[in-house]
Image 1: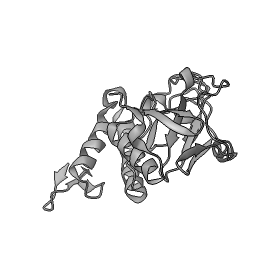
Image 2 (image 1 turned 90 degrees about the horizontal axis):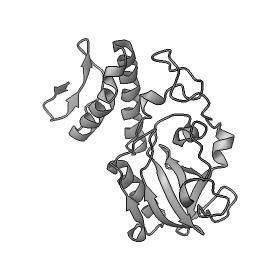
Image 3 (image 1 turned 90 degrees about the vertical axis):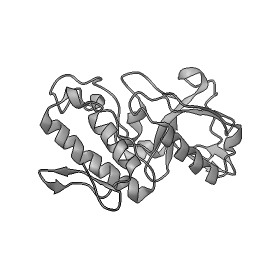
Length: 221
């Protein structure tokens, strides 16, 4: 890692630059992700992940959202075999949605309220909710689309299910009553989103008309 004359950080491999100039925060995030599972995998696997992180940085800059990759230990959870180790994955039958299935779970904000893909007010406190005391799991992608579900089963449907294990701009749980968002947290084992991801999510929904001043916001560290 080198710091250039402009004060930006550049990562190199075999003497060649592999990233664009990164700010201090971007560089720290990059290193945090890279070394989180460093001891578990071979050098070849780390190099593969390094290439993936470079792509995440690129997509973050294009989208304007800080993106968070899924933890490496969950790779292969939809097939049962971890691609890095060749050993059994953390799970073996997690369902990854296709675009048609994902669109059915998209929620949008209209006049400050949350509506589902059928145009009805979203309600996580509905009696049909099978998950976590009236909360719904959700993710936001790199274009600002938000997907949520009150169905969540360990080993079958997780935060990673929405985007097929791809990076998220935010992931956690929301509590919604009759279309009104009343609570949000960053609880997700698959992504472990940070406070910075929560802030960008709150700023985004605020610009969409949600009154974030009345929300019960919980940051799990």
